[in-house]
Amino acid sequence: MFAPDLANTVSGFDPARFDFLAEIEATHFWFVARNELIVGLLNKFFPAARRFLEIGCGNGAVLRAVDASRRWERIVGSELQPSGLAHARRRLPEHVEFVQMDARDIPAIDTFDLTGAFDVIEHIADDEAVLRGLRRATLRGGGIMVTVPQHPWLWSSADDQAHHERRYRRGELEEKFRRNGFEILFSSSFTTLLLPLMAASRFKDKRRLDEERVDREFAVNALVNKAFAVVLRAEVAATLAGMRWPVGGSRVVIGRAV
Image (tube, rainbow, N blue to C red; front, side, top):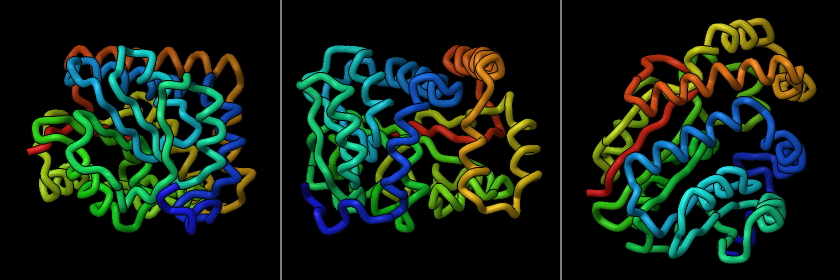
């Protein structure tokens, strides 16, 4: 534990939410498709990487998918909240390492040839401190991948309840990459094909801040969940084949440490 004073505090994320997320991450269409996109892009851009650090690994859902994608020399998940790490430890094999730490103060220098943060830095006011730390932790020539929610006009009660600091403007994350030592290799929106439905849902309840309403966004009928998964998987396949999407609920940016 590198930041014990911040453990179990509501610092960018409510640790009580990990139990809820652990129940849905394996089957919810958005989490499933996002994992396929992350793994597909990492394999496409960094097939030779063997030492990986994920910042804000939460329950370990992404880390489990990444770990299964190849043989790693070292794979590490970090998280501020021990409650998330408890779920992650149960989900992943013993060779996966875990540390509790503040993403703004990463105690590693030139250690990993691939780093990632997946829907994490939008929770942190000083997101560029995280990017600076990731640059220090990443070997020159190594890779980084970050996903974030996109478009401030989509802001709703879901963002308030998730303790988001921002939704990113198009081009904002790319600018921050360049300022903090990375060149851009890839950038695209995600959740494009379902954006009209997402926007309609967000605008309908824009002024409602109750947690129950936010949880209902995840309580998708099984048939609807299956249909949405088919749509997003088709989007993922098109992205991996070279398609770039100008708008979408999320953005994924890949860079190289320079």
